[in-house]
Every structure is written in structure tokens, then in C-alpha cells.
Length: 116
Length: 111
Image 1 (spheres, each protein chain N blue to C red):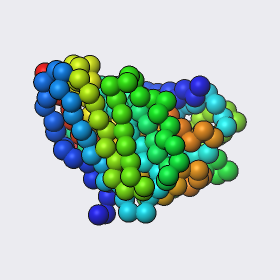
Image 2 (image 1 turned 90 degrees about the horizontal axis):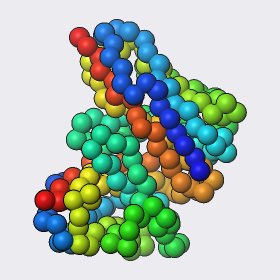
Image 3 (image 1 turned 60 degrees about the vertical axis):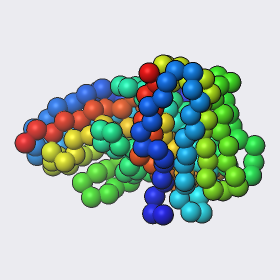
Image 4 (image 1 turned 180 degrees about the horizontal axis):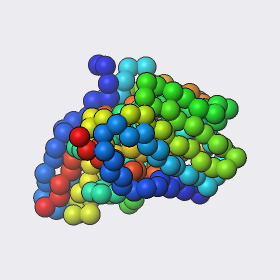
């Protein structure tokens, strides 16, 4: 596709349920990031992937959060036993390469997660 | 730890004005700095990217400058239009490949 695609665009779930969010990066982009944006707040880094290297998981807020990526394609972010404080927009972004001075980041439209 | 601050947090101007948005960062060892625009309920759209070796970048009515040694960047918008209303975010990329975002400036351009 032409841009970064995220699904679903909206997700409402009950507290305690697991959710899985999907990101399709731009074809050929080796670097992929996940960010979280709570209402009225800035972007909070969660995790990034670069090719087949081990991901940087330093931003994941708890062990209920995990993410996978197969090669340089689709990534999924899983939140287990969701809590109300997990409610936020989850944004995915990709770029041509991670270690570069001139590779801009391209964002998807995000998944708005509401935990009731 | 890199910290990025954007001032002002919100700005309202009449149509046609030229305006400047400010971004400051604490760690000057950056790869690049990127300015984004975010419309309500949408993702971020990349506007300009300035590499660490560059001083400025221009695209249409937008001009972004970078003073790495002082840890500052500005986004200049000429002849503002109501369609420019959005939140503008700056982000810096450090040697650890971490991208750190500022809190954004919410811009309203009134007709």
C-alpha cells in the first residue's frame, strides 16, 4: 500500500480482555516503531524493530504488553488483561532504515483503544 | 535522557499572519530533527526533516531551522491559513535510534 496501515481503527474492549493491534508498514521499510498517545498528551515510545535484529522493548510499560514482527513485514502489538489506563491511541510508524540521518518516519492513522 | 520541549503549547492567530513555533532539546547529539503535523483523530504527517549537519529545510510556506549547539529548532509558517490549524510536533532522533517527541503546539488559524 501507499502508506502505513493500522487495524482496527477503533477497538472497545472490556477490562481484563486481551487485544491485538496490527500494523502494516510501507513496503521496503525495515524500521518499525510503536507509540502510545493518551488523550491530550504527547507520544510515548513503546518498542521498535529493525530488520531481524532484536527489538528495543525499553518503552513497554509492563509485561502485559508485547509485540512481534515477522521479518520486515506486519507487526502486532498485544495487550493482555487490559486495564482502563491502557485506553489511548496506539500509533505505528515505519522508516526506510533505523540508523540513518535522513529517513523520515511515516505514521499510520492509529488504533483508538477504549477499555471499559 | 533526551527531553524535548515545545513552546507555546497553544497558539491562536488570525489568517495571514506569519508565525514561529519553537522546539528545544537537551541532548545535542542528534541524528536529525523532524517536524510533524497531527490533525484531530489522525496520525502524524511528516512535514520536514533536518539532518544534524543541516541548518534549515524548506517546503512551500514552511521553513524549519536547526541550531544543534544550542538545542533549538523553529518552524516558520508564512501567510497562515485556516487549513494550517492542527497540532505541530517536533521529534529528535538520537544515536541510540530513539525518537523523542515534544508535547506539541496546538495551532488555531482563525478566518
